Amino acid sequence: MYYNECNSVSQHLHYYHGDYRPMNTLTNRPSNAFIMASWAALFAGGIAYNVGLWNASMALNEKGYYFTVLMYGLFAAVSLQKSVRDRMENIPVTPVYFGLAWTSVILTLGLLVIGLWNASLTLSEKGFYAMSFTLSMFAAVTVQKNTRDTNNAPILPPTRKPQDES
Image 1 (tube, helix red, strand yellow):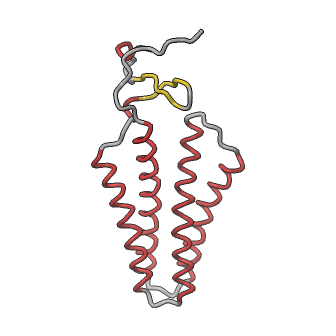
Image 2 (cartoon, one colour):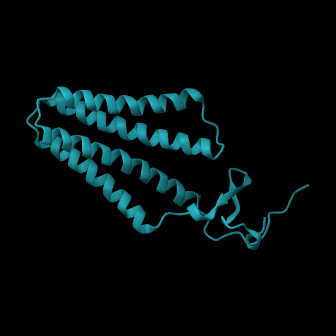
Image 3 (tube, helix red, strand yellow):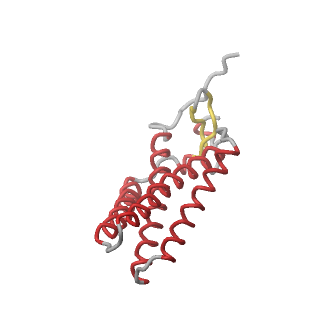
């Protein structure tokens, strides 16, 4: 489809893994402000969580538990987001991996809730860890999405239809 003949959603053909696929240009590339805000949120959540752990008066094994839950949660959230996005773009994702990604996200949330429920922390400290964990998870997903959108965004919109090689 020619760029000038695109419909109201502004679709064009985008070269991806050896073939041309329709791509919505409204979601091409996030703005620089959104990219920076996403990174800032990731750093704010991660740093706040870890500074809270550093200053907490808990045993080292408890600190290690909460740190591991955060790292596992960030990986699980990014992995799930990538799997969902791959499926939306018709890139194969095995059901086993997709299920493991969902299980990992649910497991990390459960581990954090159980850990905070049983911790001898004040409610404000528990809320602090829960909110900084949530901010970090959301920001990690957003940073991963922005990275993928930035890498997949065409530099210039195509001006002509690719030629058939038949």
